[in-house]
Image (spheres, rainbow, N blue to C red):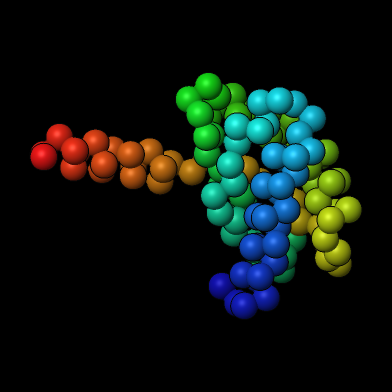
Length: 111
């Protein structure tokens, strides 16, 4: 990923995370954590990987909430950062967190 693309991805990730935490329109959104952002080369599409902090919110429900609130999040993002084109947001469940948990469980069982 080119340097500019990486910097914009980092900026989008940080700002969306803050929006979910501090400006959430629904209380469930505060349980969602943005773990990574991958931008397209033309910076018009952002794939945001997320996970939930607590088991209180299933990832299917979190994805539904994010999809419903995507327009509002994008609007708030446009107020925070200035880009020629505001990227389309796509939310994707980050299952690497579950893999890490399984590895820890297996490791703990072997002790």
